[in-house]
Image 1: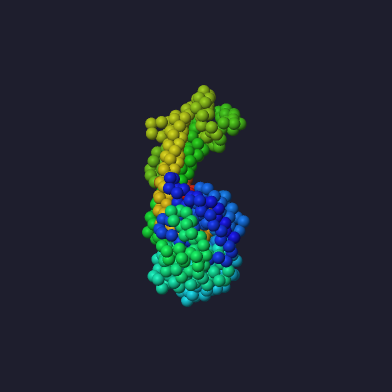
Image 2: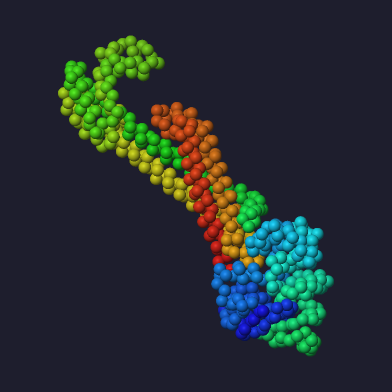
Length: 230
Length: 306
C-alpha cells in the first residue's frame, strides 16, 4: 500500500506540491489529473524518490520513501516501474536490449532474460519488434516497449508520467487499455494525465490536483460529476 | 552483469569513432614522447655510470723505476679501498695498444718501439671524489713520472669537474624528462576529461533513465570507465609501440654513435626487458588517468541526481 501524508514540496519560494495526502491500495488504478503545472509530475517524482519532500511522509509497502538515503534509492527504484512521456529508451540498443536492461540492473540470472522479455513483449504486443531499434518503431510501439521495460522486473506498482502525452487519441486509447489489462493482472498503477478523453473513459479512481493541492479524490462515479460540472 | 557493463562501454567507443580517434591520438603522441624521454633518462644514467666506472687515472712509471718498487706501489694500490679495477700495463703492452689504435695507418707504428712507451698503472675509483686525492698521492711517489686523467668534457679535465659536468647534464635530462612527462600526462588527462565530459553530457538522458530504473552508481559509471580505459590504454600502447619501433630501428646507429657507451642495452633480452618495464609503467599510468578522468566526468553529471 502507498501512503502519502501531508506532503509539501518547495523549490525555493515556489510551492509545487502543498500538503497533499492520499492512499493507494494494492491493485488500484489511479489517475492524477490536472492542468499543466498543477504538480502531477512533481508528485510522481516524489513517489520515485527523484527528490525528497520538503515536509510530509511517503510510505510504500512499509518503506519510508521520504527518508531514503542516497545509497538506498537504487534498491527502492528497483521495486517500482516507471514509464515516461518521452519513452526514454536507449537509442543504440534494440528493443529487446532496452527491455532487458532492468534485469541487468536487478542482477537477474541471464538464463531467465529471454523468457521474461518474450513474456512482457507478448503482453504489450511488440513481440515481433524485439530486434528493431527505437528509431524504427512508432510512438505507440515505443510506449509499449517502455511499459514492457517497466514491467519486466515484476514491480508491484507502476508510475506513468503522461504516458499518452506524445501519442494520438487512438494510440493513447490502446495504451490506456494496455495499462488497464496490466492493472487487472494485479499491478497498482498511478498515471498522471491531462487528457480529457482518458479521464472520461476511466472507470477507476481519479485524484484532481490544482496549484499543488488535491481538490478532488473520489471514486469515478462521483468524480465524473465534478468534471462534468467543470 | 559484468558483460552488460563491458558491452555498453565498447558500444560507447564504437558510437563516437572521431572522438575516440582524437583522444587516442593525443594519448599516443604523449606516451610516444614519454617513452622516448624514459629511454633518454635511462641513457643519461648509463653515460654517468660509464664515466664513473672507466679507468680514468693512469700513473705513468719512471724509466728508471725498479721492479720491486713498482710491485710495492701496485700492491699498495690493490689493497686501497678507493681503487677499482687496477691494471698494470708494460711497455710492450702499451706498444701493442698503440699499434692496435693506429692500425689504419701502420706507418705510425714503424717509427716507434716499445721503449718509446712508458709502463703504467691504470685504474678507476669507486668514488670519484677520491680521484684527486689518489692523483696527489701518486704524484708524490718516487716511481711515478706523471699522472694522467683520461676523461674530459668541454674545457673541464679535472676529475670532479668532468663528473660534475656529466652529473649536471644527467640531472638536467632527468628533471626535464620528469617535468615534460608530467606536463604531457596532465595534458592527456585534461583532453581525456574534456572528451569524457562531452560523452557523458551527450548521454545525460540515458544516465537519467538508468538512474530511474534503479541502476546503481557503479552500474552507471562502469561503462564510462571501460570507455575511458579503452581510449587511454590504446593510446599508451600505440605511443609505446611507435617509440619501440623507432628505438629498435635506430639502435644500430645509436650503438655506433655512442660506442663504447651502451646508452641503450645491447643485449636484445635486456632491451626488451627495458621496453616491457616502460610499457608496464605506461599502462598503469594510463589506467590511473582513465579511472580518475572518467570518475570526475561522471561525478560532475550525476552529482545532483538522487
